[in-house]
Length: 444
Image 1: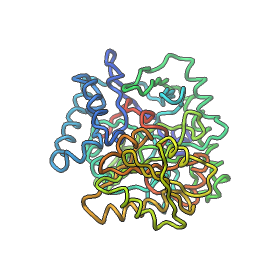
Image 2: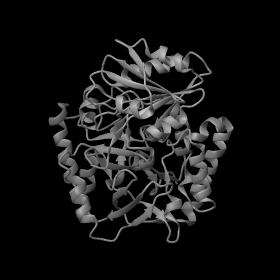
Image 3: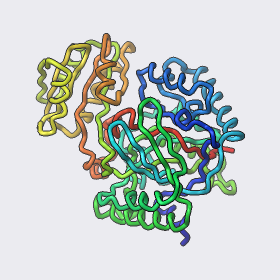
Image 4: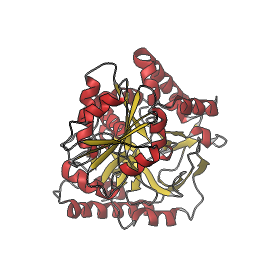
């Protein structure tokens, strides 16, 4: 069995990456994930101003903040422009690298270092449905209504660039630490500051078969251990948990299923690039990864209405709090044996408690979904970062401050129960999210 066959058994493929030619400003080229700062028009306006007419992945993505204002024909026009730009960049801007994986080191405003590995994963070994137990598993519920815009960008696209982060359960930190020591003996493939105060990133190409053999052995070991740790059947190991980009990965899977059905029986189908998705793999236990809650904001509702919605929870109680700092400290108290949430609107702060029955989102999300569905005037958004929540929760917007999740429980919880309720956690603050940078060809 050759190295690529061994890697395939772990759901992995070595990509042929494309990067901008020399002279392109990588700080303007790299742009944060499309699902960040979804209520912050000033952020995306500043990115657009910074980029100007320069080549940028901003022109290859559809920021979710635009979905509400574009809709219908506007989205179709934006997608067409994205596809045209992809073709232009592919023909005259992007340069092939030697085939290889990329070892990543990322600096953020909150952590000095976070390590990762860029490669491709096999979508045949991923399924987001709650009952599925594949090699690559969704960690949060997937909202099918959110997939069509991302599918439209990917469908027939000549390029793929990615913000998807997958996690491995490598408590001994064996894989990425050893890769880093080896990879950094060579010059980096790229290094750049990241825009909007988001830190910096460097990547080193792993292009030797000896590097890939090491990866194959390391992932084989993690696959073997997964059965022992989670008690799963030997034919259903759990190697990768989706950390960020769940809807993007689900969209990639949907497009692959479309393409596979339309081209059934064609030669080379099983090796088509659409079968794979470009991702960055990180270790759950990396010191640079902190799990943060994803907060909620309800628009069009009053403080009193949202408090009444939550009051149906078991053993409900609430009390006013004097400041945002006090509210944040109370909600974040890990020693509390009850579920705690904070309600925020302007300068009003309310601490809400209820009986603990699993994660806070287990009972919260169904209540919010039913409330928003009851009146077309209501809407909900999901906010990364405490500061962003307090800035957004003004006027007719009511914010819900959620408690943190212990990242050490992620794999065993998902292995036992399947995906968590959607938007249960975030890997770090908004500025720590992955930036689009590397590309590869998709449909040509």
